[in-house]
Amino acid sequence: MVISFIENVFMKDILRAIGFVPARSNLEFDFGNCKLECAEVLFPGGWYFRGYYINTRSTRFFDFQLPLKVESYEQGIALLVFNLKRADFKIFPEWFCRKD
Image 1 (cartoon, rainbow, N blue to C red):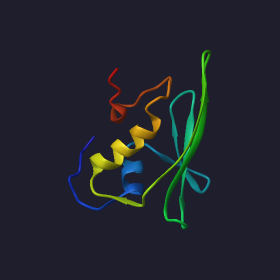
Image 2: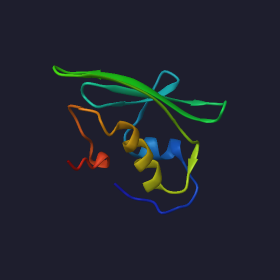
Image 3: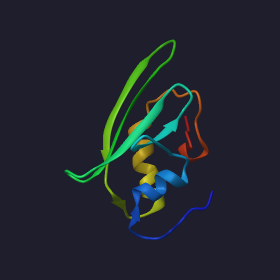
């Protein structure tokens, strides 16, 4: 994975770079027990994320928004991981960098 230090990066470019794939009119990432979907919304302008997971001990629903542009690749990843930090996914991708 190549890390970009370009300023004002579009969140869509980051999402595609880390493995989000087109699904209907949205982008989607499969964590094994969760398919996180996101869609670009016009008002207030940004990316709307939604999804849920269920495992043997817990259930969690995700519903959050991120801006259309961020200052850097690292900031985009940090914002995404921050909103997913309590998840108990089956698959933790490299970009998630989970540290317990």
